[in-house]
Length: 247
Image 1: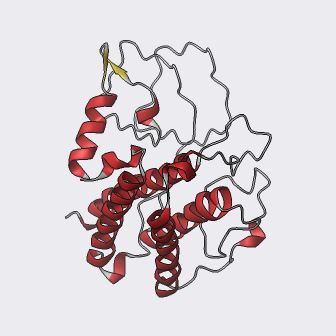
Image 2 (image 1 turned 120 degrees about the vertical axis):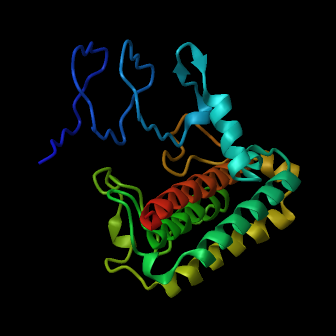
């Protein structure tokens, strides 16, 4: 049986002559970690926040190359960093068109299928409902309890003290998920239709950290987080669907 190690602190540790072959490291901090003289054939790294930092391989920062290739594979993804209302509207249209293609082309028997430890398509769409609720309804619009019961919260939220009673215990049907997802997509479309540079520059509270947080995102920042969530989870689900349909 595979070992399960949780909440071990290896900060500043030096690990030598050890094997991590086939290991899976999830939700862990590898910031500033140094790997020297290591065998990395088949090493698979997936970081949602990769473009905020650097990843040095043999002395070369590969982040710009990774970002350029992802933008090539997902046309319109580069607009997740847009600063203008027009750019954000265009970016939102691009990612929604890409999502529509994936949802339409996914066979019904695969909407609840998933790769080990990853979300299915239906769960991913529920998470994007939550992302919209968090950053639009919560952060931007200031709704006190912004979450739809169908939302899919991130792993570990319960241990952080989040009130899980907000969400349904039994998964909704796929048609119900699609209906709520469409409603949330329309909310973003309607918001961006009238967004101005002045509105995008206004500050809001961090929806997860509250007023005491050191970070006070602008409205534009909140919209960009929504776009980042949309593109990242589209990449994840297309990756997993490809694995599920591979011969």
